[in-house]
Image (cartoon, rainbow, N blue to C red; front, side, top):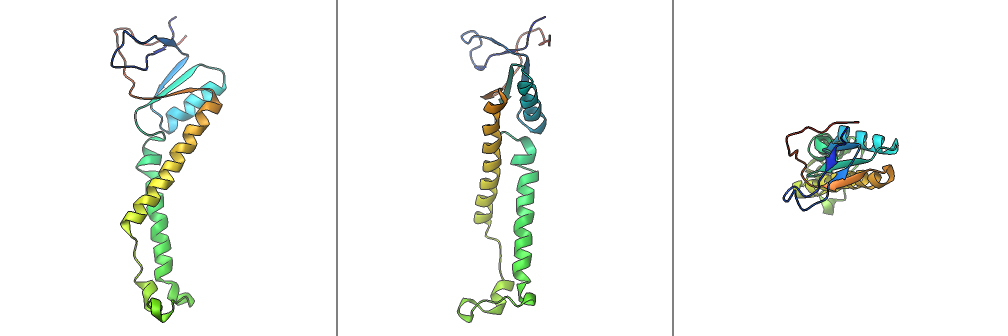
Length: 151
């Protein structure tokens, strides 16, 4: 049986050699990266292709950014309500009412969110070499008339 093949240059299919692999994973989201690393650690020749950021929707646009926003809102709520716990600022800094007027600065929040997400993406990408899989940053597409088959 034929093995799935990888050609990392989708723009010029005839000039790039074809590589035989046991598993080609398209997409580096939770399921893709987990499967790719698991099979590579088991000894399969694995290539994972991701066109954007590793981690998929959860890490990049949903779960982690949302949790970062929720954490910022919780901190803000605690600061705004801190007067009830006897926390105040000196008068020259606005006194007791200054904390109640605290706000989230959107630019700083976005920078923090990007740092958290970027750190998670980088951590995942560092795990790939240790698993033994190959990681290709690019767009995967299927070409030709015959589907890929597993052995």
